[in-house]
Image (cartoon, rainbow over the protein chains, first blue to last red):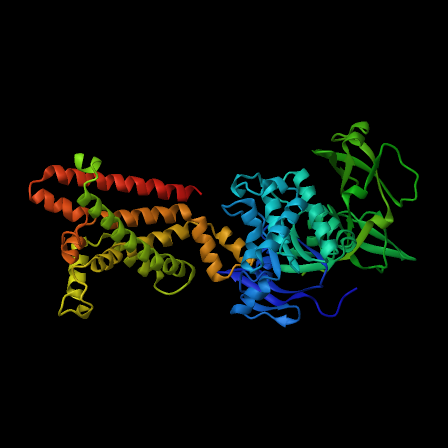
Length: 370
Length: 217
């Protein structure tokens, strides 16, 4: 489903601040009604890209197209185009005025009729659950409330494009969920095109139709959540999307779509099996998500093709989950629930069996090192 | 004290004129300074720093120098002599405007600098035009802007040099509180001079309170 003409498009976009290159030749098109998540670590250039798309900044080089038209680098047309979009910044900035005035300002600036503004503002305040706050000074609100004001202020404009920069990064989980719900409702009801920068994978996965991974100023991979999380195209992407096991090896056989990969430092016969078309002789990385690794005290008979005896080297607790580092001839990391970790009596030195399915292994071609 | 309490008609008349002249010059100066200050703040151009430095230097021009300048401009042989407004309230307003415009301008620029970059950017992305952005920023900076107005008005109401040199202290026409105080003192009417001085301070207080309420809105 790739429509012919995107609503907003950047071409060969590069941007520098002084000597520092932030964006390095980006090409990206986003279709009308699409929800696009831009993921990447802090400093990758997500915010800069959004700012350029919102025409707040003029890129060092490259072009922006909006609704099929090239955006000029200066002039009145930029304001006209900007008024069809709305940008929600990471830290909500409310104006030192009442909640009502905050939400109404964009409509006022667009010269909307006063009675219409009143009706629209009332309606949106109800949507975001701030109906009783109309006359409060927005500066006295909590972080979550301020973010909802910022959201209402943008949504009330019914923009064609909504740009979001880490919309929930500074919020507690409850407020964050509320904002996410509001966003996905807005996207569905109005067919709003949304471009959101996030470093929260689950948010990207839940809300977005398509995900782009921005690493160090380059868009290294775009695709749907399944593609990105299951089949990363490079070790960098794999690392970033939480594939903790990236094991170098060589395919020694491929039997009807099941490849056997020899891994381990000395390649002495540890074989991982993966569902893949990779031919024998190919240098590869085997990628295994830690949550796909099952730990059992005994060798466990199942359809899973990969089972290894493992010695626990380290256990770290991550809230409800425990991260288990093991040595099975190669280093393997697994994620288990805290309860399982207790039942298995996991601690360093403990011996057990680690199992994962052949379908859970994603093979990535390894470029021969220079 | 009696003179204030008894609402002496001449004192009241002088007070009203003082307020009128200082108010007019403050109003006109702010009509120039607020838009111009916004323009200087939001536009990027070469020599902006230098300009701001010059404006700030003009904060401390002595009133007598401005009085002299306006006198030369408006005197019969001067370039604006045909207007024939020397020794009128209009001449005093012109002088006071020249006195306080740099102050209002400089303080407007610094008030706007205090508005966060993020606020300006948020407004821009919500679709504010340049003019709308300036208006919002002045509103956001209202505390500092009103402080600038208070200072400008205070300087206008309390200056003596300009009122004396281009107003001429004409009784019933250009006599204001500062020139009246000066005259009373030289004539040895210390009681009147003190009363007028206190009244001037009282006025400043009332105006401060009024503008402060505007600030807190």
